[in-house]
Length: 303
Ligand SMILES: Nc1ncnc2c1ncn2[C@@H]1O[C@H](COP(=O)(O)OP(=O)(O)O)[C@@H](O)[C@H]1O
Ligand SMILES: [Mg+2]
Image (cartoon, rainbow, N blue to C red; front, side):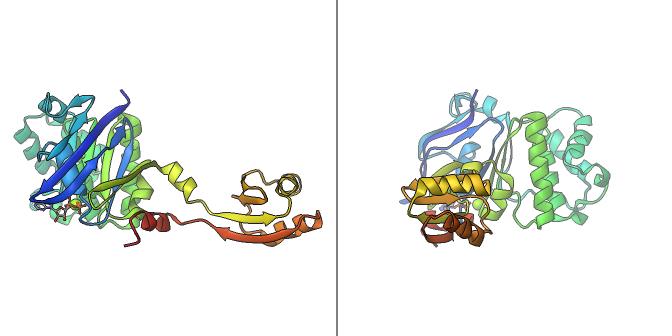
């Protein structure tokens, strides 16, 4: 199956306020799907609907190819989630915290606790009180807890929130490992582009309850690549000269006489000189392209 989860016109209204508006999301198997939006955009509300924790005002959630309303518990058994900050008994250690959860949920046997703690890299710290855990360790313990019943899809609300760059890197590696080794699909929300872009392979951008865009990270990167825009009197010959003399192959001719070079961006003088020497009139060379941040700001109306 291609899609782990799809929503159709998913909508949530509180009184007359539309908080989630006509969302059509698609999450593919093995995705680390970054659900990006400012505070108040509607992320948590959406994730709660995906989990069946709150009822949509309109629209549908399809999980593993079946409607959530249909065989709901079966589908939900295949999901693990942390919505909101994961709560633990701070005076207990990691093992005891997980054991309480395991018994409460009537899951597996005791061995699975060491297994998930190994997975998230907390085995050595398993006897420490959770009180003494760093934020990153607590996040990982939350993920360990969500992994106890071997879910195929993990839904995590702002898992990188408050982590330092090192912590984000570790979490990212954990997500990648889990995707690779166990084929787990992730939906992770964040209000920070910088965090999402470090972790996700697909990104859905939500703004004021609407899904503005759903895009592969690679495509997004291409859209936001920097380039040298060159205006010349003879585009075809210029392309030939750039290839032959400077070995430039990564370029586009966007209009007659206008080229975008995606390499040697730091060499405008050399490019200018080479073209001029070969009798090509150079009218303009400028470095352009949006940063990811610019792109995101434009999309969300620059707020
Ligand atoms: N139970 C509720 N009743 C009324 N409004 C709500 C409720 N839950 C969330 N909202 C509103 O919905 C909007 C989106 O909230 P939320 O989904 O938490 O956004 P995010 O997680 O992206 O920060 C906010 O304006 C919030 O105030
Ligand atoms: Mg939220």
